[in-house]
Image (cartoon, rainbow, N blue to C red; front, side, top):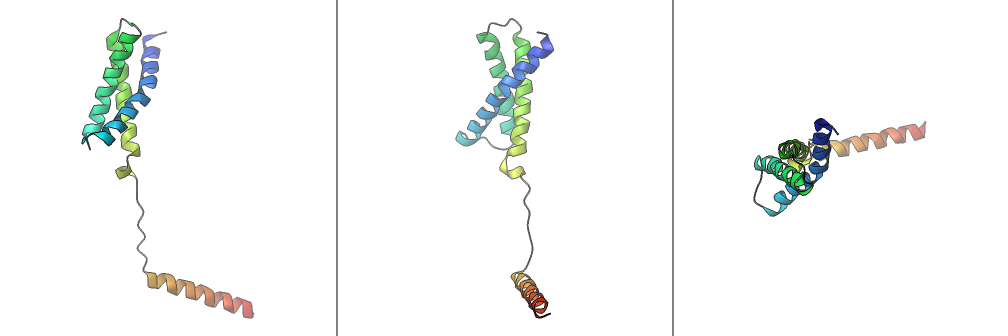
Length: 115
């Protein structure tokens, strides 16, 4: 397997773990805001190094780079799905306008029935 394939494989394997740790950091630590993506990247690098040591790979730097990529990916994913980034729709309609529109529709329906 080439180095590029190893890098992609490690990044794909570690990204869900880094995302999970980011969710745990969010829930159980006071870390918020811009610190969470940084923690995600650090977690990815640490997991990449652990991966290299556990599976006895000689190129620890390559696996640390794979962890960095996965941490960046999981940090970006976290920013995409966090509740603050979700768009919210506001509807500024007065209740009187709704009642008037309903009454107009009922009048129109009544006229159609008469014809």
